[in-house]
Image (cartoon, helix red, strand yellow):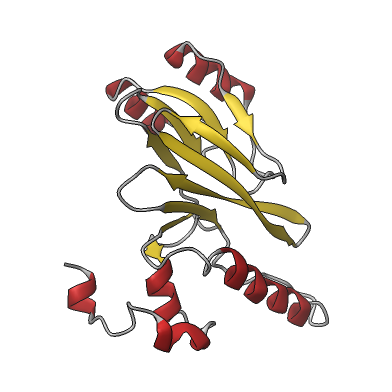
Length: 192
């Protein structure tokens, strides 16, 4: 099983925070919340099938003195986090799972928490595979690649990347390669 990545996002002024794709008790998250004097307000999940332990939520509530809201769902909605705004966008339902992405506004660059959206679907059923694959391609084109090239993409599996980098280098989407401002960058320029 691949390890999943979760994130802590917070507003530096109000110290209000949200946890993204963190379902079980995680000692390092608790330490970060305490060290940075954060008040967790939301638990966001890109896939609603992730486990939410009541003990974990109670532990966070004790540390923040706020009721922590677990937010899942298919409807699009905006959440205020101090000076930041987090928009939940419904991506699609793939393999029977509804997926969301969370776009953060109010930072120097737009940031999107995308879960497993950049990973092709898994299917052992040969007949079902082309349909799932075609749906996944359309999903990424319409929900991820419509964001600005500078948008930082934070997946739950795999490395962080940007929309522009994925357009220029993701072999599943060759049609974007020539139009991305990131296509001509060398590896050295990308890392500086």
